[in-house]
Length: 219
Image 1 (cartoon, rainbow, N blue to C red):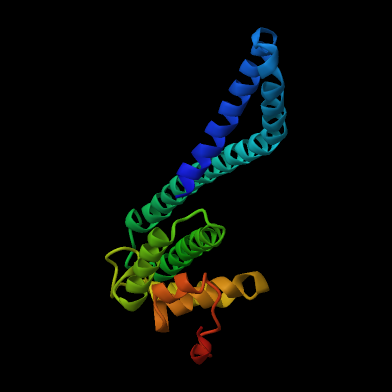
Image 2: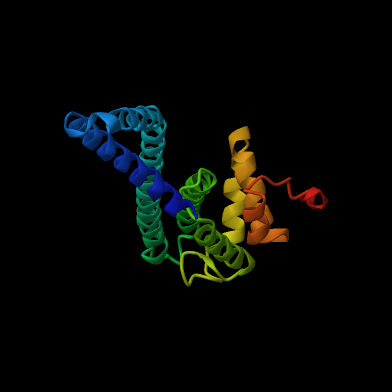
């Protein structure tokens, strides 16, 4: 119903402008006995005009805001996908060295810091409304699946090899180092999505969830 109402505002404003212009031009050609009636109608429309024009202006502004928001969503999605591909390349392109477990661990930790930093940015963008709920819930479901698989981590296909780090260990190492207040909301949301509540709960709560130590406080 919203779009027909918006269109009617714009059409009404345009029609009033057209009628006022026509009435003003015709006044000199209208017989005297009709001129007063035309003048009354003209004054009524003239008084009504600003309200309609204001409504039409508001409609245009709303439409422009929607267009800008849509453009921002497209931009954020493109950036998120591009960054994810770049981070994933580190994981799939890494060649583990069996005799250099420490080097592999360091590479794994560097990967997971970049990976979870990207997830943090995506979480912030979602909370701001720049990533649609249905898309973000699929991303959370993927994080949940990765967290539960002990053989999925860094480097890819390196399960059981020296230096291998699972997604769970990577998350625990990174999140354990993020102690500032600004990380708490994100950490609680990820714990809820991956461990005990699930992605849909995070979406419904808009990411604002209690710590994992208090799951009974869920909304």
